Amino acid sequence: MNRSNTGANTNTLQILMDILVMAIAYALDVFVFGRELLQNQHIFFFVLFAVFTLIYVLANKEAYLYNVTLFYYLDRVHRKLTKSFLTAMIATSAMLYFMTSVEKTKKFYIVFLIIAYVLVCIKMFFNKKLMRYLQRKTIPRTAFVGKVGEFNKFRYFLDKTSIHIEPIGYIAMKRENMELAPEGTYLGCLEDLENLIRTHNLDQLYIIQKDGAELPFT
Image 1 (cartoon, rainbow, N blue to C red):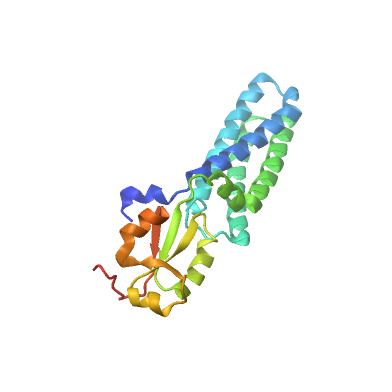
Image 2: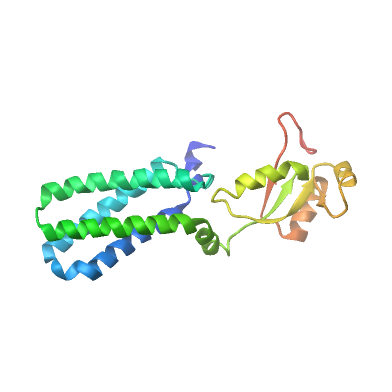
């Protein structure tokens, strides 16, 4: 990928969801304990919340958690999210230590951390379903080009990522492949690609081939 296009690999919706999670944790904390804080303490904690969220998001990005091709294994994701959370917590705890010594503000901060981490874990468990629901209107209709048997493993790993598609069917690279496969296996042949795109309203194609294999139109 060209360096100027590296942002195309970033799931911006995931970033916005993490910011929302932190905002909800802050709002809940303010709702429960906000009356105990003075006006200047509210301002300080809003700054603290903003810094925490920024560090958390940057740490997640550094850990590639916002990549659309990230394999979403819960144990690995949980370790990375926890590391990012601890990084943000340590950095903002230093701010809290040097800028205030009031016990009420410390309690406010601790409650925020607890609520935020619980929400982070809840989002982690429901992340894939949530992303698919939010992206349901923009999921591309997709066809796979190649031999059907080669796609089973590919689609297994694809389902572990944040890439959401609507599988429409398979397209044979060569017409003789269609003749060898059971009837109804393929939508058609790559030679008829233009017609297949129009007929099935396809948005994108995944072309899977072994190293050294040539496409019919090369």
